[in-house]
Length: 343
View 1 (cartoon, rainbow, N blue to C red):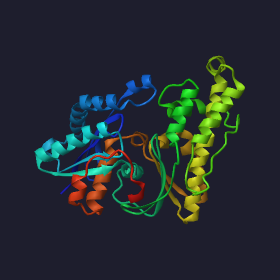
View 2: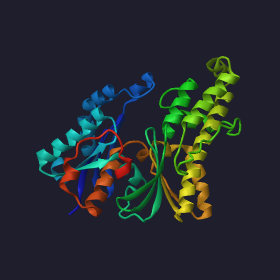
View 3: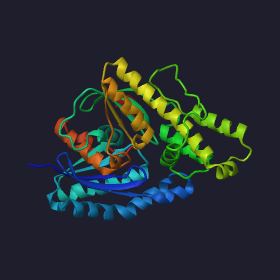
View 4: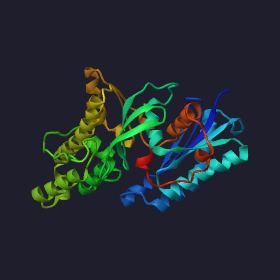
């Protein structure tokens, strides 16, 4: 009997619903909250209200596009955390209500796990071990994945996540939120060697990341060289592209260096890169150069890089197939923070 899975993701500012048949995605609908741009970041209360307004519409569209009727669903899954509590509760309660009404099983999914497996959406089986780099606006984590749901965290950011480093840089440069995609687009036509921004190293753990230093170095660089940076950049478009390219190079080089260090030290040739920043063009192109050295590097499809319900549903499929489902998994409440010690 096929596993027909109705999945929901509302951890931050995307309202998403997906229908999967076993490991195959039949529909994946995402409604992004673009209005946060005017505030320069996510406003939690507004995000949760928007989820309430759109979750039913998004879910109905997912069913319509999949061709599956609600009464055929035999599994419901939703992101349980980490994330914004108000946002999480909207999707979690919607999914639980659906499961109670239909008298079918519900599985709560860890958001970090769903990003980790997003590179393999559609695959029936995954080959292990591999090194996973999860890099987003809220998390930068390096993990060794030994088997289904068997992990060890090697390193993590000690301050800003890589996505935050891009967002804060964009704000200094007078760019809109979210900054990552904008900086990536500008950097494509810039000179990455225009200025050398420093890369931070964490002495305590060679696999840990730190991005607060590069953010500060950009601030001091702008203060030292330009009296009015916004006026200067409005006159000199090439300058903006060069700064973006140089800044992006430093961030991306750090991510790649740490990941390859972990892979080489553990004798692993498989690398999976996921999370919102995995859509970055330089990250993808630079990582793919290492395939010539025998590495296999996996990225999610662009639509699965940012938060989406398909990765939630695919992780639920893997959990249903490879992990023992217990009562605790069904009853745990939503949680805001990621538990690094028990992952």
